[in-house]
Image (cartoon, rainbow, N blue to C red; front, side):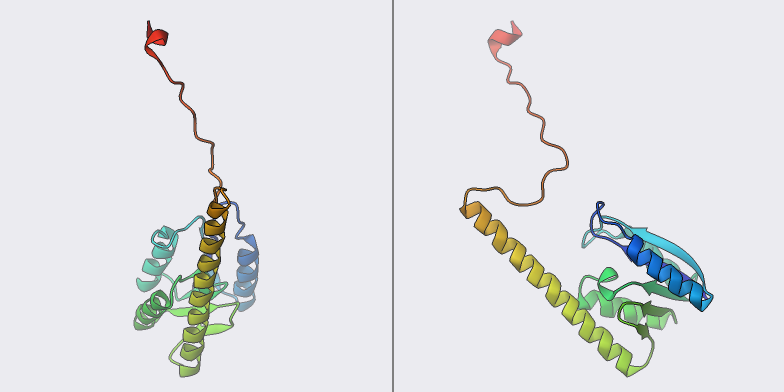
Length: 165
């Protein structure tokens, strides 16, 4: 079986190696031929590596997509269900190692996928709510919240008429 291993982290400073090691070990134990696809610093709308894996699988270049956890693949329950429907229609298997789930026609697996997807979506919403609350508290205390800038802004010198003469 030819498998696409998809690993994703949300930021460049995170390391996808933990996911990759476990997924490779599993694929080797199964005797599968595999290719690894790594996505770093993805956003909700831009995950070009995921799109590439998905498109190749739908063209039957892969028999299966293997991921570490469902939340590494989809950011919402709706996205998860849409992707699974298309993969099922294209006869592509989908496995999540962390949840020990294989996407197939078994109604028990589909129920588990829906439940886990709903919990993942709920967890993301709770994280966002806590983050927004913390930022509001920081602003009320006169502090600036949020991620630090990658590079500090460059202050341009103020040029007066006297300087230019």
